[in-house]
Picture (cartoon, rainbow, N blue to C red):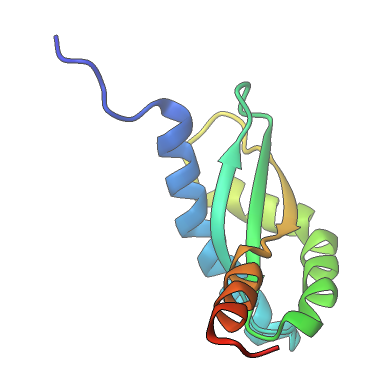
Length: 114
């Protein structure tokens, strides 16, 4: 029997990335939040916690957006429990992903801008 190329945590992360991405998009539109998008999802080994990394279109408003998403985490989890076919939906923890900001800063430094 061939080995699986993806583990269960990889499949759960991909599913959460897709579903939470849609929910975050809807929350941004409905609640007039800063424009945010899901960049990555990491699930703990015991599937109890999902860390969701989000990026912001305007980095200055990122902290406000992450704070709002953290406040809505329980409602988003409840929505996920109605759509996902898993025994227990992991707790959602939102974190700001500053890798895009760091990349842009490095590019600007390489071009000679400050």
